[in-house]
Image (cartoon, rainbow, N blue to C red; front, side):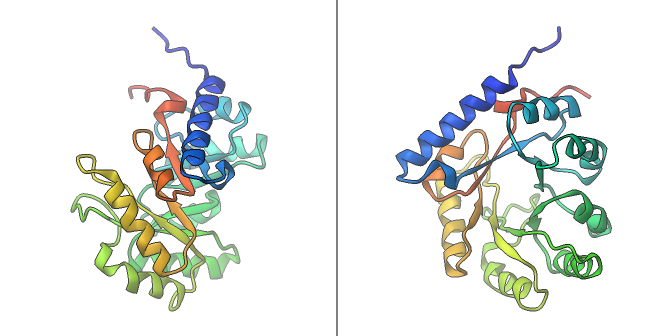
Length: 226
């Protein structure tokens, strides 16, 4: 049986929750940007969410974005797409062409490759540094103890336009501890952007200062089986 999804209703509900969480935290709801995560969903679903008024999206894979977004952006020129998955250095050129924001700068080699491509293309994208706040070996991200020096290197040696930090807390730990850690690292470097919080914990993330929250299933429904 085909799943029927009311994308406009889902979007309205998520936006209302974001606004409520922001007000509860004494924040302006406009200070939090919803990033609708279309990973694994067909382009038609992104088109429906675009038609419902959403303009900021997240994709995990360069190849998937390459298949979906050129046509979608032609139809909705004001749409923005963030890369929220791991970026391989051999995909940097394609990523810079496709995306508007890179949220997953996590190692010097990638930072250097991005800097070279920005120079070559004359096209700079806002970058977020991914911090592996839980020091999980299976996850990407710079370790918290290395974050200060890496942020300084990205800004100084590589000249990247670092807009903020991003994290994905461990699923079995209290997320507020990780959001607080990311906020403190950002504060030390006067970074305003905090990409943290997903469907299950974005309300908590907003209380800790999230400026970007990444929400997928609550908007798009469950991912189709492949």
